[in-house]
Length: 449
Ligand code: UGA
Image (tube, rainbow, N blue to C red; front, side, top):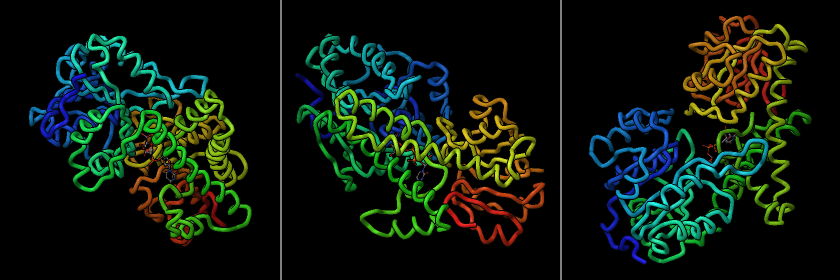
C-alpha cells in the first residue's frame, strides 16, 4: 500500500468533502496552516457562495479565515468528485449525519453516497478520513466497502477522526482542540494525521491513536456525557422548584468540585441543535442493535428531562399570563438553539415559541442571527427587527436564547415598552434582583419566587 509518505512536508494537498460548519471550518483552518485545500459540496449555491468568500451560515470568526484562504490561493471549492479525486491523496469526509425521520437512528445516506461517488474514482493509494459523527461500526464497514469499490483497492485506507467543535466557537475549537482522536488501522495513517495536526500537537494538544470503533465511540460518548450533565442540572432545577431552592447557586457550588466541573452545568431550557439530541438518540438506537440497550436506557431519561424543560417553560409563561395564553401578546428574545449561532435545528427556543402560538398567543420573536431561518420554518410567528420591537406591548416576555445582548438588557428600557412587566428567564441569564427592583415579575426554571 502506498499512502502519502509520513514525513514532514509530505502531505500538501488535502480535500474536504461536505461544507457545513464542520467541513468549512476544517478546510479554512487547513489552508491557514499552509496546506492546499479543495473543499467539495454537492450544493452548487453553497460552493458558489464559499468561492466568493460568503458564508452560507453564521459562525463568528470564520468569514475572515475563509477569505484569507481564498486570497492566499490555498483554498478553493468545487462540486466535482473527479476534481477531488485528482487533487490530492488525503480526503476528509465531513458530510451531515442527521436523525432519520420517524426513527432514532442516524441517516447515513449522505455519507454513503459521498463514499460511493469518491471511492469509485480513487485510482491511487490514499487516506480517506471520516470526521462525521456515526454509529459505532460504520467505519469498519466503510473501510471494507472502499477497498472493494475503489480502483486502488486496498491502497485506499480509511481512518476516523471525530470532531468536537461547538457551533459559535468553531474556529477557536478547531485551532485549539482539547484533544485529537485518530482511529487508525496502520501506523502510516497515524503518521499522516500527526502531520496534519502538527500545529496543535506542538502547542500541547494530546493526540490519541485508537482503533476505528473506539474513535467513533469517543464522539458519541462525549456528546452523551454532555447531554447527561445538562439534564442532570435541569433535573435538579425541577427539585429546586419544588423545594424553593435556587438551582443557579446549586450549579455554582457543584461546579467548583473539580471532579464535577462547571462546564455543561448551566440550568435552563436545555439542549437542542443538530448534535446532542440526535446523537443521544442515535446512540440508543445503535446500542439496541448491539444488544446492549440497557446500558444506555438512562439516555431516555436524559432526553425526557430535556423535553420537559420546554413544557415547563410554556407553563411558566401561562402562569404569568394569568392561566391562559389565548389572546396574550408574547415577546420572545432568541430562537437560535444557542447564542452566537443562526442554527435552529431542534431549537428549544423555537419549539417554545411555536407551542405558545399554537395555544393562541400572538408571539413576536427577535434573534440577532436566526430570524431568516426561523421565518422559513415557522411562518406563523411574527418577527421583529430588534429586542425592543419584539417585546413592545408584550404581556409576557421570554428570554429563550442567552445572546449577550439579551443578558445585558436594561429592565427599565424594556419595561418602558411592554404592556406588563412579566419576564420568564429561560436561560437563568438575568439578575433577578435588578429586574424585580425595576418592577418586573421575574420567573425562571429552578429558582425561588
Ligand atoms: C456539541 C458539543 O458541545 C461539541 O463538543 C460537539 O462537537 C458538537 O455538539 C457536535 O457534535 O458537533 P453544540 O451542539 O455546538 O456542540 O453546542 P453546545 O455548546 O454543546 O450546546 C448544546 C445545547 O446545550 C445548546 O442548546 C445549549 O444552549 C445547551 N446547553 C449547553 C445548556 O443548556 N446548558 C449548558 O450548560 C450547556
